[in-house]
Image 1 (cartoon, rainbow, N blue to C red):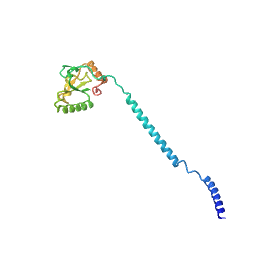
Image 2: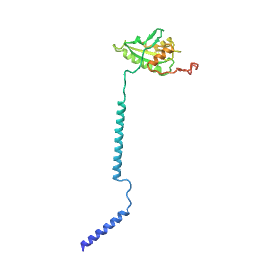
Image 3: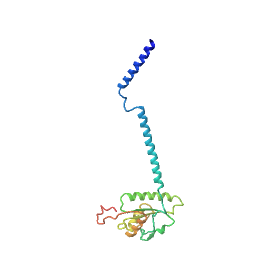
Image 4: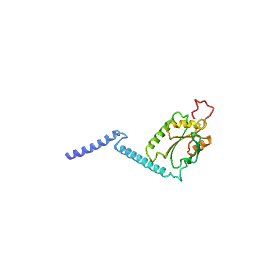
Length: 196
């Protein structure tokens, strides 16, 4: 009788269990399985992104090709502060620090020429480079920067600095050789509005 009672109890509890699990609503969309799937998908996306990024970086770095020497610089002819003609050939065998600007420049040119003067002063301390480094300032405003104006301007920065000017054509040729782009402004503007 005891075994019959247990068997009937198991049958009843199985039926109750079936009916009770059917009436309980599901726990929700978040479960351990969905969390694992989301994590695996996220890891896959990050891994794909890193592989694609490294492949793209390698492709772009391997596409860079150069042929010959870069075309920077070339022959030029200008005049110095005393009006003496100066050419690019006069500086062969020397290290030239070259700066293009104009004497009426309010901020950038003086700051950069001060930096250039510091470099030249520090190089002057070494015996090997003292006579081999020449700082040059070439004006981009030949209409207002006369020989005297350029000479007085560069003397404020360093005694070795050479100021150069010339005709508009000579200045344009030197600027073009060094890939320096500038625009001439309307010369009829007032002095207060005209910076260069």
